[in-house]
Each structure stands twice: as structure tokens, then as C-alpha cells.
Image 1 (tube, rainbow, N blue to C red):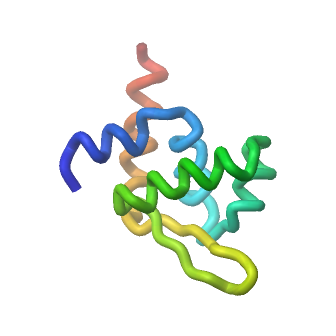
Image 2 (cartoon, rainbow, N blue to C red; image 1 turned 30 degrees about the vertical axis):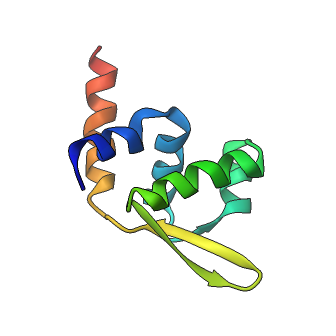
Length: 89
């Protein structure tokens, strides 16, 4: 994954929030993510699609829902480091 794709994945706060949720939970549906972040379903879906297109998350279908999970487990470490750096600024 090129560096610019990593930066794009964590650029938006909502994507970082989604990634944090997926770090804390093995798999979550769009509805669970929507409810936990208090955003619209279309907003959650749009950001999940971008994260999927970047290769950061993947999903499995258990009808009638898709369940998303981190494809790259090391993203948890990256988010932790990113949060520490941001807190120092």
C-alpha cells in the first residue's frame, strides 16, 4: 500500500473513528458502526467503501448484512502512534 493511500485512509476523523471501532471489535456491520458513531448510514457506507478500496478493511456477508473487519491488523498500531503524535501538537 503506497504511503499516500495510508495517509488518505486516516486523513478524515470519521475514518479514524471507524478504524478505532474495528480495532476494538473483530467485526461490525454498517448499522453497528452508524449507531456507535451517530452518523448516517450513507456516511458510514461511503467511508467504509473508501477504506475497502484502499485495502485497509474487508467484509464478509452474513445475509442480510455485511460485516467489516480490519484487513491490515497493524493499522491498530498506526492509529495508536498517530493519536499520540496528534496529542503532542
